[in-house]
Length: 190
Image (cartoon, rainbow, N blue to C red; front, top):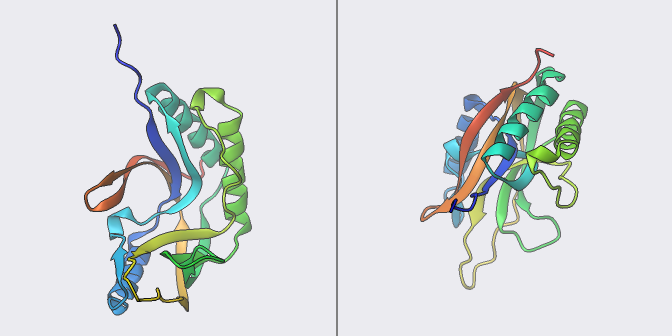
């Protein structure tokens, strides 16, 4: 008897360059008085396509489809312009670095999602509409009795050239959520 197929929780994320990760790390250090679990530089990423579940065959199909979709897009620039509390309209529980809208990012996100949806072998099922906002979680606020979490909204100017997207697997450890790069997918060459 064969063991059941294990599904992995995977997602597509922006590959944030080291230079920008360093700027985020410095911002985190400058705000260390905030009661938060800070996201480590190796776990910083901006979600392009939210998580879905895939077995090994679906993972291989997803990589193939995403490579093809990515080949039709040249690298592009985004500018992280704000550090904000989130989610909007609710009590803050996260701190995000947010980027200004980018037509190139929007087209890339749309093409990747459409390619995955058009390929049943990828196992991709879209749950709702992917966020159009470009953002990366940099902290998870701790709930401290009697302390109101800060409402963060600070301007920054961190330019980021997006040359690749990472297909990642998410899981949790005793230290909190953790993401592992399964495949780096370069843009261009289409």
